[in-house]
Length: 101
Image: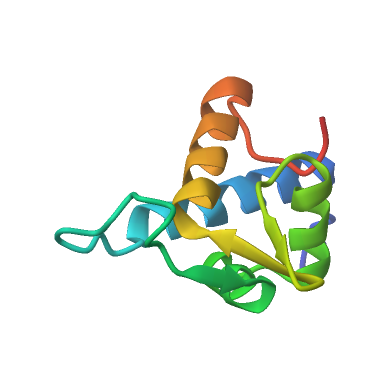
């Protein structure tokens, strides 16, 4: 008989942490990429969710917990550099990436 594995909250947190680390580690770094927010392209919610392979619901939760975003004309946009810096700082300060504090 097969053993049934029922994940708990810590399993889900670990899986999310590992997935985010993998995404951050695999992001391509462009030569001469600008870190100037004035020249950096704005990304949509859908684009950011796609980069990190999370749902829009998860992205919204991250926004409620401090993920930096910008509103223009009633729409929400992100700067990739700000999102990456936020996730790196969150990983360093908490030792984990979760949507809950």
